[in-house]
Image 1 (cartoon, rainbow, N blue to C red):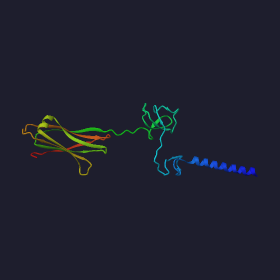
Image 2: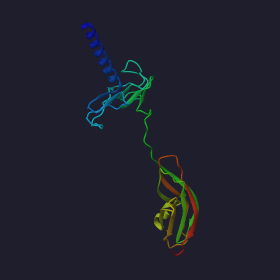
Image 3: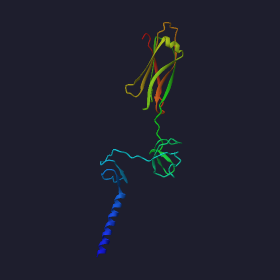
Image 4: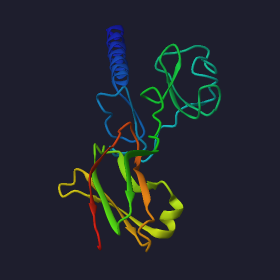
Length: 228
């Protein structure tokens, strides 16, 4: 009878141990007393609340290159580390192993910030200015979301004459519907001698672009503002 009771007690303890192992394998929480998330194998938290105040510090290793497993003995798919070295094609940052090589971050290649390009586009005018005031005007279209028009200028055949006898006033403004930019270039002639003229060769629009978008600059016409 005593032996039978001892066997029952041992069986009961064994069942308790099995249940404990099953619970332990289901979810494990480290830190705090909140029930672990049922979707997680391991739930880390430094507080007794759902949102903790501390992070997970990854193992810090010095990688040699993405192709070399060192300092690990071999490539292991799913391995996650923080690399501290600058060597070969690796630099400090988080890397994971896909089973054949180290890959930076969780998405693969490093995303480089966009590079700004200052560009110019031009239209040919080739007109001689001998009036008191002339206004050239047009519009700029195909402006992408990553493009900013910085300025507009005229290119003259004889800049020295322009600097002493002419005043050039460039102007950029948005159209009423905000979809295009209207431009104008007013050239005023302050030289008394009517024989003195200057040739306007072209108009150049300067813009900053973070993609491959190219502007379209249109010349709509010219107004001779005599006596303006």
